[in-house]
Amino acid sequence: MKTIGHIGEDALISRLLELVPTTHPALHTGPGDDCAVAEASRHEWQLLKTDAIVENVHFTAEASMRRVGWKAIARVISDIAAMGGRPQWFLVTIGMPKDYELEKIEQLYLGMADCLNKYGGVICGGESTRVSAEAGLVISIAATGMVKKRRLLLRSTAQRGDDIYVTGRLGGSLAGRHLDITPRLCEAHWLAAGRFATAMMDLSDGLAKDLPRLAGASGLGFCIDPARLPCHDNCSSEQALGDGEDYELLFTVNPRKTQRLAARWPEHFPDVPLACIGTMVASGEGMVLSGGWDHFR
Image 1 (cartoon, rainbow, N blue to C red):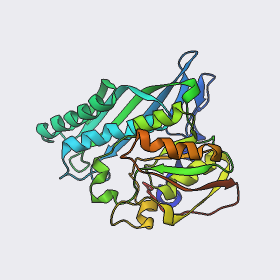
Image 2: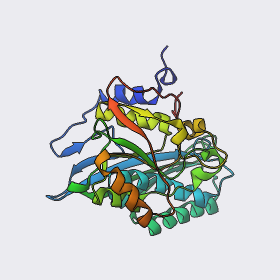
Image 3: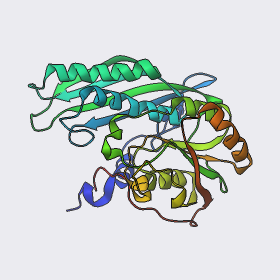
Image 4: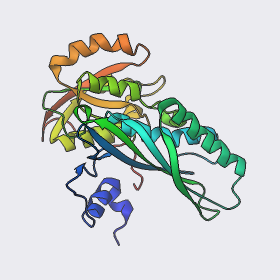
């Protein structure tokens, strides 16, 4: 019997999408990017995103629930940022055992409020349901955002010869950083406004998983130099490639703009490292990466 674990997350999603409608005249970008993109007005796209975190998968029962609440919202904002957008409306669905501590749930929502107050967005509704005592807490966040049409950034628009960049530092998320996500909202808006990025996504499942996704969406290959990966202290390049939950920006830049980007970035974001790690190449060329997070492998 073939199971979900045999095929992995990406193959599972591909198979399931064949069973349902995924196109509409008002839908600009459907499944396969950080957010779906739909018509909003003459000058703006609406972004749609949903994401879930689960106890004992994305956080432990002993974790600070305020930090867990921050993470639940920040993950979604990171995806909206990667499209060049701004967060708008949020819906929260929460599944919990009936004997779950009330104070923990209150702390969870205070953490959500912390993140929304910092980056924008409003909780406008949601749902609560009971799960078995063995299941633990399940939190699902659905959100909308808005982006000006001329600033929309996708995974599928990189060009051969583009340089590959990442913000911040990578690796070591299991040391606790996975609860302290910093969505690169300002950085993404600046990149979009300056027309620096040709394609972009956020790094949630690890560079080894996400860079091939961006390259595949753009119909390209890639080459990177592991020695140029910006690693956290005491982290190896293998951890930077595979640990996941970095929530930094991965983007491509036309080489004609790299010198201007390198000169201007420190003026605007002096505390956020920026590293050029490689180049986009033709499909079928370049290198193969393995590793990164997969829910079902």
